[in-house]
Image 1 (cartoon, one colour):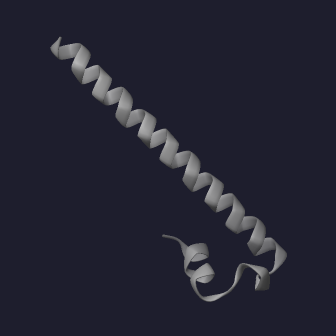
Image 2 (cartoon, one colour):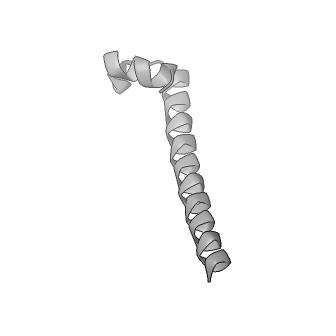
Length: 54
């Protein structure tokens, strides 16, 4: 959770100033990329554990 998420909870996106709209989009993209990265890292760790056992 971050300040942008908190703001979006109370203020409709269309009412935000342009700079905050851009920041909200950037944060959303960054969060999605981070989630994909962590999911891939977790999958790689599981594969490595299987390879080490086998």
